[in-house]
Image 1 (tube, rainbow, N blue to C red):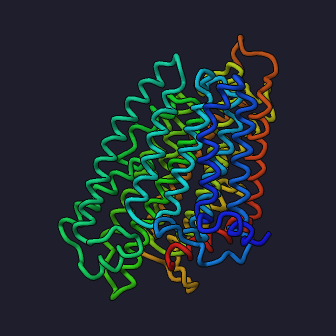
Image 2: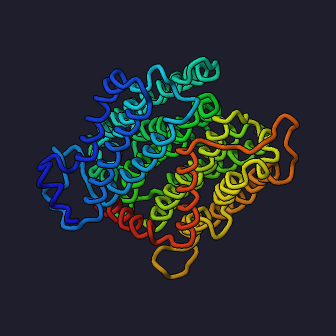
Length: 505
């Protein structure tokens, strides 16, 4: 369908049309629940709103003939291949979470309208981050997601772990916000601009200054919290364990990806542009990101080995996955960015799928310890097989999506993107990533061993029947994990276009 259909309807508001639909949906959710008093109709309307938003974005992204004059909204937000693809990623996360929340025994029933509203608001915040053209726009979008997430974490009522997680999340989140806003002020003071497209030229012209270095460190720390990169990661295991599983899915696959988008839009673009102008030296910054990436993947994988709670294990796994994607920030090439975006997409389905299995089993009374999964293959063979697929994909076992996306991502750190076959200086970082992938296979296999080898407890007998919404969502994620592994071009071409749009816009 031609993209002019959207511009004919929304006019100058077309760049933010997908967000407008969700904002309207978020405003009416509490009133709908007040009227219906049931989860199902409210969830149905929320899903309809999300599907409309996705349809609008897909038409704008793939329909063709999108008018250039409608690519920007008031100079604050810009729609292009990169922002459109990131919006699609955030929408995919949100629709999965909305779909399973209605059946989850962990989600609130007292404030379910507010719960849906907060999910939609958080999604809108992530989408605005994808389109923002300056540091203030990104900051506001991030805070919209953060504040909504603080509330969502604590909405798992009558659970002391949720209250503890919420307090830790708010305190550390407040610190990260303070560091971020201070960093932005220092960047503005040294470069005299907040516009993303002007940061690179300003840095090339002014060079490094103490104010810029302090601002850079504060912003890396502040936004490093959002992606749970080492050493800003300590909140993640407690929050993922304490929150309801649908919220854990949202944080692990949505909020974390938003933080990575922030890194790409601010730091990657700024330094790539500065380097392209008179050969500005950015090597020391690349090594800083390389060290953060190496420590994140190593600490995440090593600590995950000792975890007995599967949510905490998946949380540390998410920290390691963030380290893999941060390879993009070390290499700073278009091809590496393509691999990073592709891995972000595959991570949504493999990590989201793993959390869906955990959430489905919680609904039927299965605990969160790995030993609670003993003999699961006999009680729920299809569910156990799906979990095995997701874990093997996270470890990078071929031919699943995790292997394909890691192959593209790691190869960006090994070979120059010009096709010459010359190895880069980041081969060591790719080796660290490959070694960590091998380490991760150990603790993933622990879960698989429990499901297929260990005998179930005496009080755990009989077949397991999970809610239909969880079954459908798990099936969709499992299919995509296989399809994207075998046929990566389904998303990879869009990732390449998005990478080119971000770096060379």
